[in-house]
Image (tube, rainbow, N blue to C red; front, top):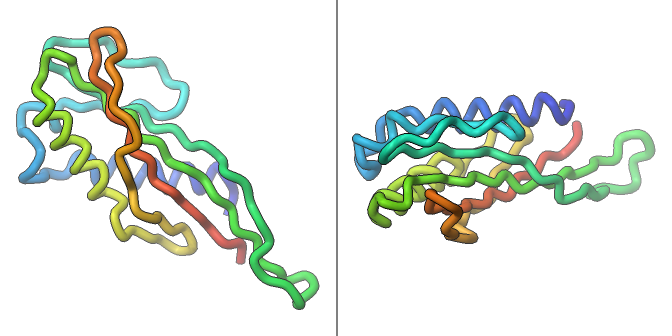
Length: 144
């Protein structure tokens, strides 16, 4: 599987699960929360609005098997970063609900040889008009 195929699979998983209803997420925020992939332009801010930027950071690779020339396995590692932007006038409860939903998308998830480790909230910042929570999801994939 190529890097592009891995990116497609990860972003499809996030986009499909992100729009599904979640009882913990505030109904007035989640359905209107667009997803921005990688370096796409940011959507225009709107009152009470939110968006999520999804980035994939490579974390290297390593050989994880030896002794079978031509059939050695290589493990690629990435960190999927979910930057959840919410208008800073919104409550922190709303931001936390979106973080909980983002964590739930990848908690215990695997598909084919892609495996998500435990997602975690790594940072909360104020950036201009936005409160931004960053969720990191460690991802790995072994070669065939």
